[in-house]
Image (tube, rainbow, N blue to C red):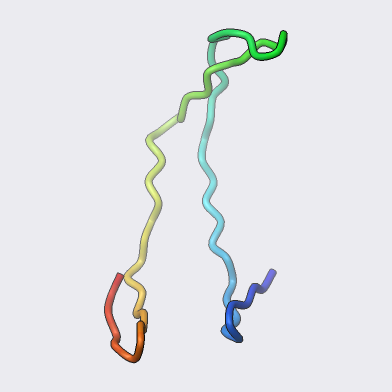
Length: 60
């Protein structure tokens, strides 16, 4: 899927996270509410992006 913002076309980067369903922590409106735990700590891989703001380039 291609997205665009102000005429610039880009492809989104999707991140998957391993989530394990835990024990029941309480109830919300009569339905059981469960705690969700991450399998491993979610770390997003961020790449250096060359950005331009008002004509000035910088790295994020």
